[in-house]
Length: 141
Image 1 (cartoon, rainbow, N blue to C red):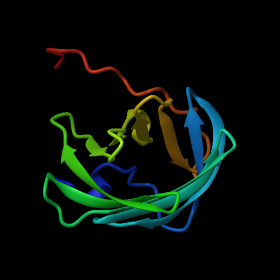
Image 2 (image 1 turned 90 degrees about the vertical axis):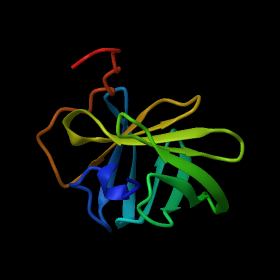
Image 3 (image 1 turned 90 degrees about the horizontal axis):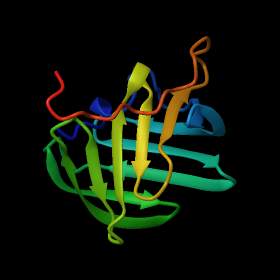
Image 4 (image 1 turned 135 degrees about the horizontal axis):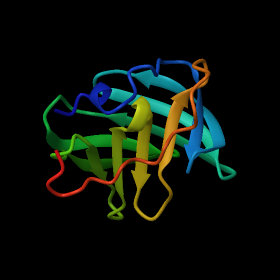
């Protein structure tokens, strides 16, 4: 089901500051703007690059076409919910974006050809930095 809240850390709230982590190191920060069943919008800066992303789902179907605005550029992008509970969005340039809740409830975003980014709310302290998402092993229980 493409309810965005199933792929995003339930501790993330709209209009709050977030940390952006790569390989356990905090390398950026940002803000959530909307976290809803059919919409997720956030902005930030990582690796000295600004990011502004807005994903709008048409409904809660497990696959279809969503609207994604990345840094001001709107695209209609096909999406599918994978068997391992990740949301896969494919951009026109064939870049794939995987969004899922990973280790310790961090939200992980994997973009083809880029490092995995972990997202965590700044207001929650006292936890270690996020671990990289675990690899899925065939036949694992």
